[in-house]
Image (cartoon, rainbow, N blue to C red):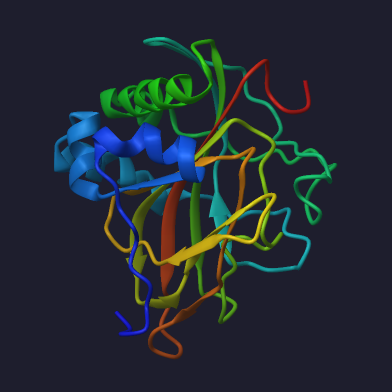
Length: 247
């Protein structure tokens, strides 16, 4: 950890909703996340194990080989979770100037991963958080397990730059940093000058974003040791009212 690194301004679970309303984002430390999810360490490890089998992203317009991912969709209505038929990931150019306007068909999440009880709890808990912010309703959820690595010497978690996702809530779980430097998270007001910079390091720490109010990005990663492969694993979940983007 660099002495110049900005530390995450974590808030308590009790202060989560107020932070989202006031600042447009909330950071929860790993211990509080495990408490919130009622999750044992071995449950979370079992979920993270599937990141070792993520296929390469074949749609990177910069020609990079640094991103691996899957994509699945769900509808969360209270405590009811239903997996939606597999579909393309689509965003308008307004929200993704690099990859918007194209249908990107990624491999779905593995059935064994989706069947894990902790996966269902994650989806329901985040549904409660977005309902507290925007009102109770069914939520259309897109799940993105990501691994960004240093195959190309540099990996770009957000090659599209600072952006919004066109949803109601974005949740970014930090799962692992292995032999890398960089990867600083940045959150800025969408309609103002204020912003925060910090580096998530704790496995299962969580960044929640009110997507209408803030834009976000993550800086590139590089290997700590030249020639040694490093990676950054995250789980990104987006919650949207009314339907999936592209419907």
